[in-house]
Image (cartoon, rainbow, N blue to C red; front, side):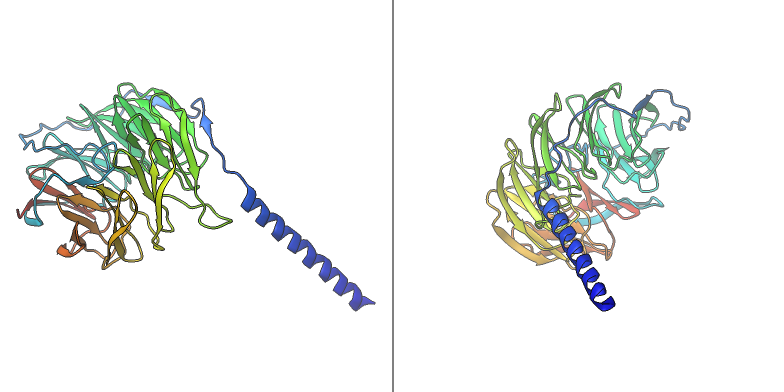
Amino acid sequence: MTRKRVLIAAGAVAAIVAIAVVSVGTWLVLRKPTLGGLETPTGVHIKTVDTAPPSAKKIPAAEHAGPCWNAFGGGPLRALARPAIHLGVPGHSVWARGLGDLMEYPPTYCDGRLYVNLERGKTLAIDAATGKVLWSRPAPGKTASSPAIAGDRLIVSSHGGTVTALRRDNGSLIWQLRTVVPVESSPVVVDGVVFVGASDGRLFALDVVTGKVKWVYNLGGRISSSPSVVGPRVCITTYSGAVGCFDKRTGERVWLRYFKRDPFQYSSFYASPASDGQRVFTVSLDGRVLALDAATGNTVWERDTGGFTYGTPSVADGRVFVADLDRNVRAFRASNGTTLWSKPANGRVLGPTLVVGNLLYYSTLDGWTYALGVQDGALRWRFHAGKYAPGIATSNRYYFSLNGLLVAFKGSA
């Protein structure tokens, strides 16, 4: 009888476990993710008094080469591309500056000055002609992002939970928005409004002059990506599987979609949305490349690379470029997703790709930076330094953020 009771009890336990597994599985399949909504900002404070001003330094004369690279990705579309600039492969290095800390994100540039965030929490202004540091400003936390340029202001986000406006000429503080959560997103400024995401899922629109909150949309999922602005819409991705666009003036939801990687789990997006002005392109951590109509959110095409992917795609001349941690780099046709070429990356790629003229750049965690031909993916150049984002370009120079080394290269063209 005792053995019979044990068997009955074991069967009952097994049945309960089976029911629980089925119930959880059914819940995972049927659950509906949140659409979020506009909300009144809470836990937010604006500081306008500078308690620790940096020592101002006279800014020497510097070259003024265009175009400006105002934000991560080059501008509001986050396209990571300057197809009209033809510098050829990097040639002679004009200067190199060791910054004593890694640069996960590339610098921004305008009016002869570079602005760069360092990982441990510092923003630098650097003379683009000489590499001389003009001023530096500490942040209250890590700054794994690119600062955004907006006229005479520089907008900096930090893991210390701040979005800060600094004066570009000397780094002094104008205003600082303090949240209760880290801000990893690289800000962008359009029409006097700062757009930036916070790690608790809030997408902020701030007045660039005062820092005042214009609207907040809570998506309910972690935001590590950087918002892009496509016409009248601001678009963002989340770690909870969402891609969405919102009215940039009011914050009202235009469209919001969630993507599953299997019947039970949603995809996660670290990559920012990049755009060609008509479509939004992004890629999930599990290698799902998406092209969505920017106006409606409808899927134009999707491809599965199968490679673990963090880096934001670059978009240029009807092509979309994606590199991944599984050591591959690919070019897709922007209109229909046709694979134009696929090449080994010769290393694990964590950061974004970059297009300059007819060259595609990327850096690997193995410590190399490469240039491939945009048309055919053939190797054109390599350099034994780099780790994350390769850098940016102006009309007459490359500025490469090679881990802790910032280098200015002349082109060979």
